Image (cartoon, rainbow over all chains, first blue to last red; front, side, top):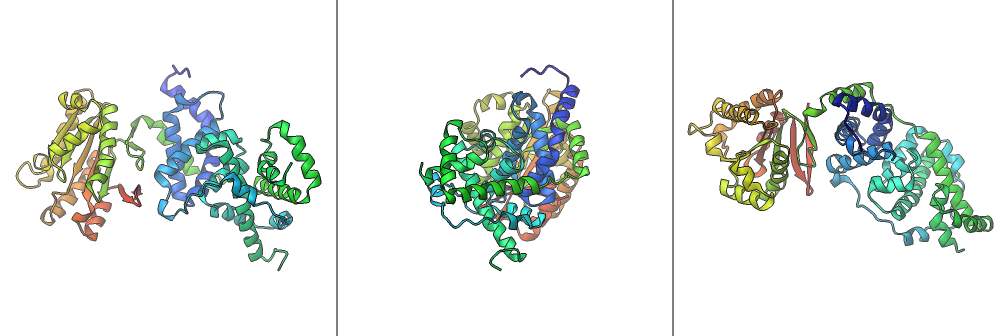
Length: 186
Length: 266
């Protein structure tokens, strides 16, 4: 990538492109760390590192996905509370196939009644690998290819994590719905 | 098409990521199979719910200001070489709590290597390991390290030659020793000074004066192109000692469950 401009121009160009994603990065950081101060530090670290490697950003690719990849790497190396994290579960395609059953009921209208805080909590309760995949796909709208690149996993695993993550989310939302008295069986 | 095969592809179908040649078969199956249709509705429902109802939390205005401010002085940030520390600003004074020599080396080697790569004058002050042990370890771990030693970019001292020049600890003396090296770094065209000092020689008689020195160091280095890691062996001291160490350093790294963790206090 060509970059012959001065440091000042580089900074201006970086800020023009990068600052617009701060709310997006902060929201994801908050959902990953579950701590406001850590989320702020994580976002700051991500911006500083992105600026440092701005020359390496491949023009024409998704800048937001690039920022998320940096954020994810710093989160794993510096902020993840490993001892408190559940075991990483790799979901194989076989498991996903086995989940198909006729027990699904249309609960979407029940979930619609849930509070925003319940939805946020349900996402934050997801095991980390599913949480990140769901945020990148369903909140940030990244493509499978971009998610695979951010998370350093094959596209098949992106699919498995989304499928499994949505299923776990559904179970969790059902619990919240029951607590609020919205569940059909109450 | 079997339900199991459809189920496998539904996620991609919902997300618009399915190969177009598979779509007619999937849609035909969905038309005929109520179970798969329910699964489809569920997946769509969750996706729409998140899309509609999960909002961005606005980054605090203070964070935006802070990031702009830090970007202004981005060139003051250095690669620490240690994942748990990541980028650190010049003037950072870190305490490391370690349990074993292998833990110590696990951070010391990349920290020193990064400093050498980034044209910094690197100083290792040893005490838990001898100068020879540290030199041998660095030689076997860092490519071409002998040339850095020969040209004086990497200097290894024993604690006696750094902290106990007068036979006992003298904070003023150690401080001027450090500042002299800093001047040497600048005069010789290095980007700055990177120090790692091992404190396992410290005993209770010198503890109080050393903590006063640590406190003072924090102030002295904050505006200089200096990075310092003070390595304390956990088994060498009591809980009170740990509190002192935490209170005299803004950043503390320690190992938990096989991973280095950063503690930061304001």
